Image (cartoon, rainbow, N blue to C red; front, side, top):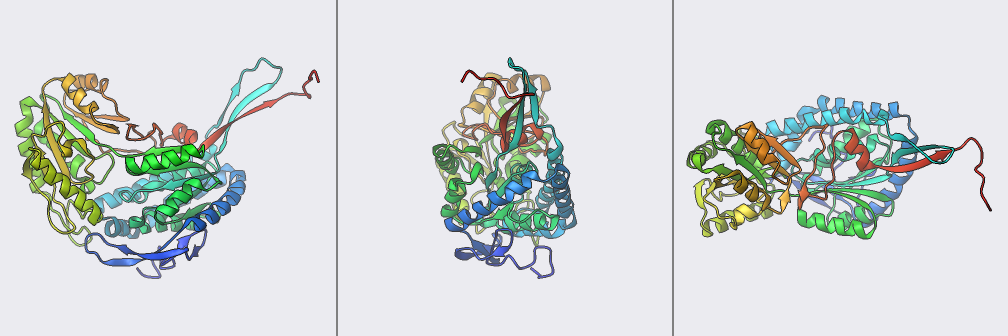
Length: 487
């Protein structure tokens, strides 16, 4: 990357604490998953770095909270404009570092831009109520900034962590400690640091602290941190939630999913398989909302499996930085091994491989598995790979039972007759239900979250949900004179 580019080279072997500085831990290589090529070296933070950053953030936040709403809003608007201005370079980093195809990278950059604009409305949004009182006084409830917010981010949508979490938190007067996934710390950390520094965010309010387990534990435990937002696996989320609970800190957990797409009798099979392919194969299935289970009515099951498999066979796979492909690489060896292991175990358990398979090297082809039992590992587990397991149902009640049998409750898609879909929607336990759409969907102004093992019920997106997530309620009373007391 050129020194004259927007991201520049000043981040090499550094962390961001308002300025680029050396982290206490040894720096590490930034790897392109499609090729194994080293794209640069990123600094790494340890607990000492995090604690210093938290102290600095708390001091900066006090002044930021006093900043007039119009000034905070202006920073967010400038940040949005910078995402648009540098979209090509930022998209290129997303493609190379995360393995996403250019269309997905463009969507991420556009989404980041829109979230900045959406968040810029928060500083001037009403944040309180006038309450009744039995005393001769005025009584108010007002929302005040929570303080320092820690954001622990995933690899799969790198600009996402400051999308439902950090951008609203900053707009509402908080400071943010961002711990990006080390695998995507440039497009998910450096880019955000550069954007907000250029937009005029005061120093210390956003700090980017890549690192391992020690850094992750520290951004939860730092005394100055009052709110933690974590996006990642359910297993890791439980540990974060346990630590936050012990420390009496608010914790928002956006976790995994094994999302169902239900194809009702009479649904058009062609459009349904198009939706199903997108839901399962977009970004190699590495999305929390990925369609992990296809429930298809008996009457169209065979036709659906055949057409879905045909779509899978015709989706090109390769390096998205150099080829026109629909699927890029899996993020790393560990994830590739897990996906391939589940594919093998599912066949050993009786699943029929209709398209795809384990693949080779950095890539796993779009894979369709049919005739799965309810206990098949490809049916019960979150695969986080480009695998479409397909099973059948005969009644709405059976479909609802199959949907709800999962421990997850993030997103459900229902394709077909709207009246029948509404009946089913009332029976499923899920944070999101999309009728005549697949399971992967999000917008800047909608509350986002899941039920059961998909999270702790937290919601982000839209003014009400964001204000609830990143502010505290303070009760204020006021009398015209000092109140009389019997002492």
